[in-house]
Length: 271
Length: 295
Image (cartoon, rainbow over all chains, first blue to last red; front, top):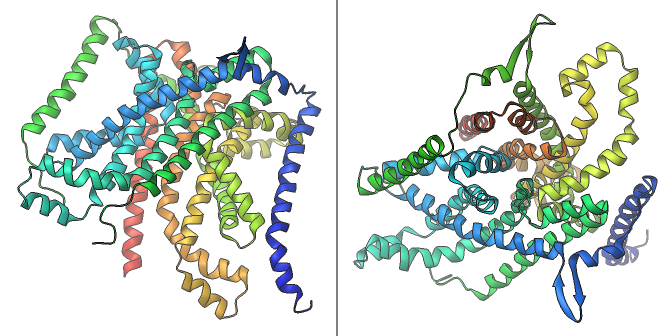
């Protein structure tokens, strides 16, 4: 190998690697198509758009998949609110001096973190919901919030504990009540720190919301499963559903990384 | 900050009142509106029962399901560690191709709901991979000894294809999370270690294998232990593609016996015992090993 060939080779390496990568992706795609062929699968991509939306007389009507996406968003929104409530209560109770508060928060977090989400959903839907006369949507929201709340508690606790002790002491020394210290000194600083993990939480909430299809809440996954049962377009519809989820979660992540640039850390670099 | 000293105050009274109020309300509704008559006596029989034909005790549905979950967890853990290890190294190499490969794998799996991934993948595995391996014919030709070993390792032989497809799904899914743990572990090794190893004349494979990975593994262990527990919990998901583990047998039993409340509470308790016990065990081991390391 001559001396000049090394830098040249280096320079073209990324392009070369990207090409191989594209080739591998194409190969995988080919495997899918080829595999479907051996099963005599009949691709009908042209039928997918009508399940997303349709136009009648220039008026837009959402199809089952988009309606399902709406339900998924609604479900996520409500459970996110409840998750924050559960998580913040558990975190504050764990930091309080209350003995019972500690015990309750601890038991809650341990039970939720050591049992599967699916089993919790079944417990809420088959045991709690009939007793309390809840409908499936409420049961789904409650189960999701109970589950994510235990993880949110950890995020809130870490966020609060990351605020330097001097901030507490200064707040107290200024004569603020413990509530006022939390409200005006600690939480405004902690929120900025908690933003990235909380997005992770929202993304995980969207992903876990797919589980509620097992109790037939009409979310995106349920609509997808129903359509597949009707049309047998297994691959087209699952790929579409997965792409919709992917678009949702990825855009959420991007939104927050943009927000993080917009919201500067107050007092950063000033000790 | 040192943990605050615990006292009994007005907050305790409030918390206890709320908790007991909610519990009392649920119990009251169950008794007076729902009229559920609890019967826990049947539950032990669902774990193990006396089979009059064989004249021996055999595992019943819950017992079989629990064992299947343990087997799934063990094999799934091994497979996920292999996939995650390989992909994790891919994520940090200098070769763009491998980085792209690892990035796509992790990005796809972590941004799609596990349920959707499992449903999509199940069609591929059951439709393509298993016919390729031709398991059913191999089992038909296997000797009784092989079958006994297989049954001990993977559970009932007639369910082996079913078990394997669930296992591969689970391992691919968890592998993405292991990949990120491995990547974080490798990146946590100080840059000086890489430079020193290169300066000593080691080639790339030696740098990774003999200098970086041994240090990275130490940093990964706590996170990997946590991921193993997550794997046990996520294994409940593959009950939805009819893999006969604990959640699946729980569903079957709740429907067939009609003891819905007791069965689901028992299943939840089993998962809790397994996961909580492991979490405690791992925590204890970590403290023990930490003491060794400091010495």
